Image (cartoon, rainbow, N blue to C red; front, side, top):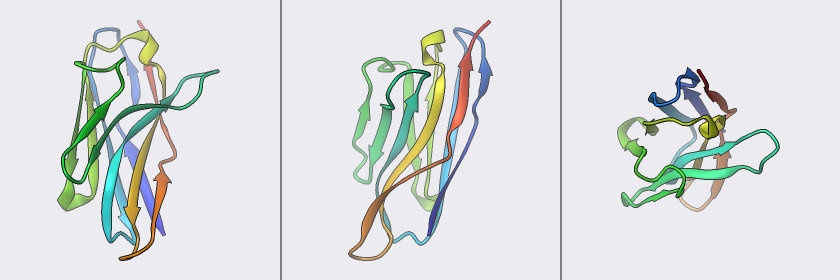
Length: 120
């Protein structure tokens, strides 16, 4: 069993910054890809940023230049630093990991979500 535990959400003023963190634990053989998605009320879940095991990154256009994703491979963790936050960044942010739980079995896992609200 694999668990993703998120932290760092909350209320932030427009123009502010925050860092979201997520740590994976459990039966983990290797992490292929890890990152963040978000879902705003009435909208579909969308990619924010991911970082694969080779260091390659993928950012949504809406956060390009404002977000930085980093991995802590020793602790199976991922961090997302977001600057210049806007009210439209308000959403529930979900940690995501694609990983091997054994040498041959892989699956996608999701955290429970953490609320980020950008408001004055």
